[in-house]
Amino acid sequence: MAVDNAMTADFLRSAYGGESMAHMRYLIWGDMAAKEGFPNIAKLFEAIAYAERVHAGNHFRVIAGGTADATVTAGAVFGTGKTADNLQGAIDGELHEVEQMYPVYLNTAKMQNESGAERSFHFALEAEKIHAELFRQAQAAARANKDMALQSVHICPVCGHTVLDEAPDACPVCGAKKAVYVKF
Image 1 (cartoon, rainbow, N blue to C red):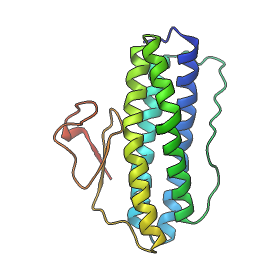
Image 2 (cartoon, helix red, strand yellow):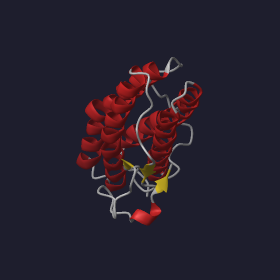
Image 3 (spheres, rainbow, N blue to C red):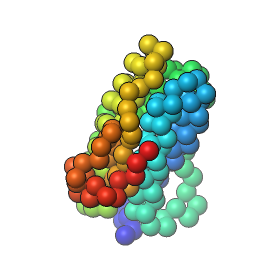
Image 4 (cartoon, rainbow, N blue to C red):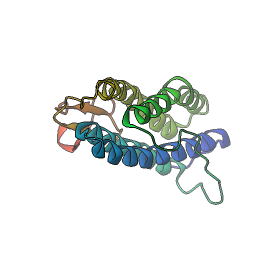
């Protein structure tokens, strides 16, 4: 499934770059959280890193090889700090995607009748809303010098939907079955 419109293709490349960077940043920040004594926050970072990888993969598949010599730049926080500070960087990044980036990308894909891009952007937008809230909860715990209370994190490998403790029978975003959720 190739993309016909240059603007939507640019948005897919931009989103791919941002999601790829978030994937790696969250893995690094998860390692740091574990070292600071927050194993559940580390687990949350690892799980959401996987969701970001799902988003990057979805965007990449929609581009369908249309990346030949395109440069992808991702603009987001970079670097490390204490876990509470890293969580603020994560919250800021997720809110940027929810409030600014994905609504514009999604509306453009709709306007340009790019159904694959529309689907990919919708999936990411819905998951990022959840990620922002989970990172807020984790930050509140870290600021109190406590770990986040959770048993497990479940990620839908189709759309990146994220839920704590128990996967739903069917993904509320894409309809994937409970059995395919990845547990962290």
